[in-house]
Length: 445
Image 1 (cartoon, rainbow, N blue to C red):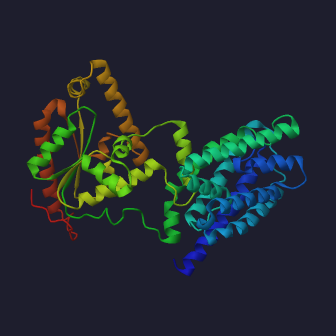
Image 2: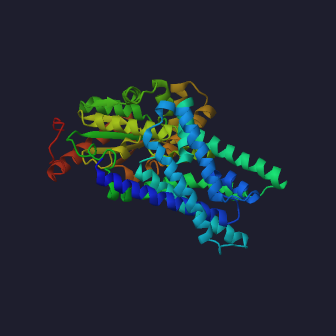
Image 3: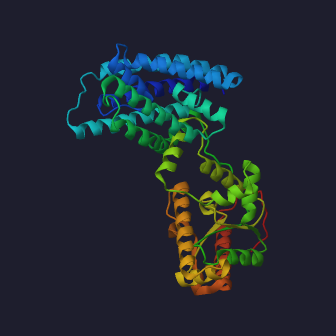
């Protein structure tokens, strides 16, 4: 990292810290509670003379000391700058509270609006801190230290940490005021939505990070055409997609990748094969998982486990797609290779009667159990695809060709795909879409 870039990153980080402080003050002035990280200092400031900023400084210093105690030699010297950050952060909280002194909403709806605005401001500040990627703020630093020391997931520790702070604030409030003051529904709301907003900003404002620091998108090089014809197959559960894929690969003398993607992902990512097989196309819509996953967006370099698995798997798919002509089954390969003109994307479907019959025979299930299995698998695939691509699974616009195996059968579907793929490949060659230097030199089809 050049000195100029380092200076730029620290400037952006400092701006993020200032915005972060202002966001916390804005949330607090909404009078519906404050953010979890400020809940204990705020309750204390309501009872004692020191201000919210001053109590925040003391609490963050305790966090830094605990970080050092937990990490010991693993505590990087650069992280001592957290002390400076703490001074700036705490001072600007008090400055922002003075600045917003006239902001005292009475109407509940207005309070709620101000709370949401404050959450959006806080999330933007955190996003800038993450984009800068220089040091951690004390609140995230202590969470990271606990996660590293006890070998726990960052997101889970963050949820537990926030809950602990809110519980402590509740106890203090009950002791001091015999009721809840300073911690209300706004505290819970901010705990639930700030991470999600940070995640949204990170996705939508990636161009800002790239423009400031010249960061290239992941996989940018790998998405260049490498001259290898590739067919990706997405399919409804029970439509015979694997049989079609294997026949297609055999007829066209292409490599067939399905389970091998899982084994390579396990090897590259340091996972067990069983873990990859279980998790690679599963995604839960539970509020708890979303809450845990959203917390990863608030710390540089932290990625939710399923997102990390998807990134590794996507890298494997890109690598395999340039090793020679191939057929790739599922795993959002159509999305991973969406910018590759040398790829042909297929979606396979079938009517529920044929799918049920096939699953009953293949998995030795009764009709009701087979239908439930199909519904469950399709739901998992749809949720997984939506989460990682932001698009609808099975939407026609994502594919070059859609084929109904109930209409054509396994052999017929393979023949239809072969014919369509051959025509598309020749058309692309004629239009010079594959004119870039190729890593792969496939045989003509």
